[in-house]
Picture 1 (spheres, rainbow, N blue to C red):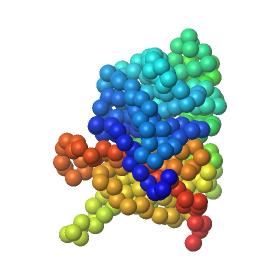
Picture 2: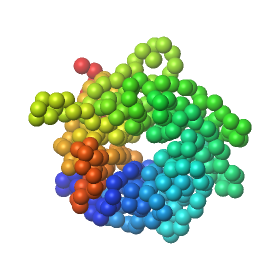
Picture 3: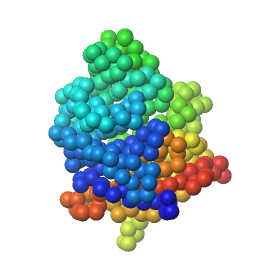
Picture 4: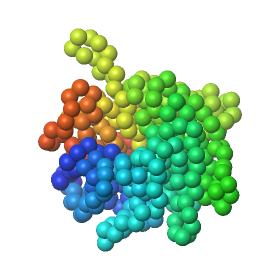
Length: 340
């Protein structure tokens, strides 16, 4: 790669809802409101569109499964689907009773978790395809999900947050109903937009529509909980001197260094050291709102999805406003700076 960043050719034609890198390769999945899931190879400059997979309705969630040839999707057709990326064959695993916002695959447990606006989770046991999915009822509509090797964090409406133990979700007793390991209220005063877990399984970051990010730890002890904090970000001063606050749409942790990236409605992406409470750097402004972020499995690349977020009050998606950028990170670019 001759430049640190390039734009993928053949982007989606409508807003991007989710992106995810494969765990062990530079394949990238992109879900869009244009009713397609796109598969790119980002190992070469400008990338290559390998295939795209049509759905009946806008696609809201996408993830890789047990290997680079398996993908899972969720969207406004209410279905949770498995896609064989080689053949294009699609299989419906379950159907919710409202749009499905998110879908995540747990490799240690070999389960797929979907979260729907019908206020339920579906747990799919992929090792036993004939086994019916398990439904977990939630107190509120889920907005964002994130996994660690052992835990699931579900951020919901009414500033509610549940933390589940994955071994409980994967157990046979889950069908009889399980309780979350922890119930929490968000540290943020306004609606949660995104949640992302630390790769070391120690905690998570969450973001809100009101230009703030909170960092918290799982350990329920008073000492650990006293470490949690929140900070303002993705705010710009208008020419009139007014502080304009933007939603923080996306969060992603670096898989090696444990720092994290945030993407906002202001069109900026920033890197943060959550332990040292410091901003590492901020990249140049993109042409539209940052809607999704994903680090590659080796941490060398950051994919940035850009889509109109209608923060400026203008409706419609102009040509060239939807894009995916891939940034190659230099050695140490995402490494924490340490405490001041």
